[in-house]
Image (tube, rainbow, N blue to C red):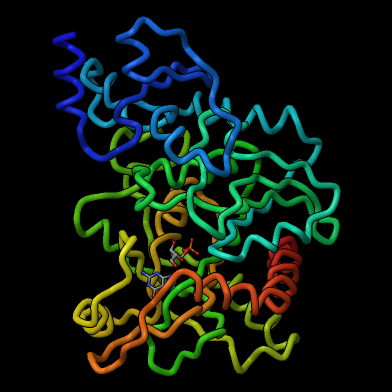
Length: 359
Ligand SMILES: O=P(O)(O)O[C@H]1O[C@H](CO)[C@@H](O)[C@H]1O
Ligand SMILES: Nc1nc2[nH]cnc2c(=O)[nH]1
């Protein structure tokens, strides 16, 4: 028991996984189970309302970390654990997608476009976290979009939910091991560029990795070269050719007036920003502000996927002290819902463009 309490104190980091160990077979034990001599148990398959269930049934290993010698290795899923999640899906679907889609807040309707769908609640997929945020259904939908095999995350994971960045982005590695080579990422974001309007669609040209400045990264820890190099380059993270094609697609759809291009910043959330924070972000050249995406892009580029990403501007960031309006998630979801039809058609056409070889 001394040992148990020692570890509870050492791992008291706010990471929900700190109390759990991954047993490497898709099953997990919480430290409390271990102390009680409890049996290994399968993951909960209840994805929707299982926030606290996941807090006690998640995976990975603050506990084991004390016993490993390679710095960082213990905190991340190994190649074999990721492979286990990929195999689970590959064994249950006949689709072999090379394009992945990640749906942002309120943008999960994109998955409805898929035909011949195989649907996997995150809670059923070994080693997956669960979605806890409204507007993120928490399902992997694999099917065809205009006859192109696609896998679509209907909901993503955010650091503010309590997950470490590597875990937020682990589905990207699962996609990679399933054969995905190109990723379409979407998010809802606050418009900081004063020329942006609510409902605009910002093609992401670049990002500022604020968490990286503070020493955190989804790649922090042991680097497995089978995924990618220790020091990946991050210029041209957002594929130039795909951005060009997306602009052409938007023009075909007569969306020129709402299409923008700019720099996205991810902050930790879950608070929206203060006026002073927004003023600082303006100075450093940020156009749109959110709480996601960057960790997914970093992990995707690390394993050499091509990335295209856009933000739906769901609210204007408030940069003066006189305004009484306040950012809120209901507005974010509402705007995403209102822009549903244009966004779904845009996503469909971008996927077709992504599936076409470069000139
Ligand atoms: O980035 P997505 O997941 O689209 O969601 C955005 O909207 C939520 C805040 O309203 C935050 O989660 C923010 O990141
Ligand atoms: N951080 C942040 N995330 C958002 N997601 C949607 N709108 C916003 C916003 O204004 N700020």
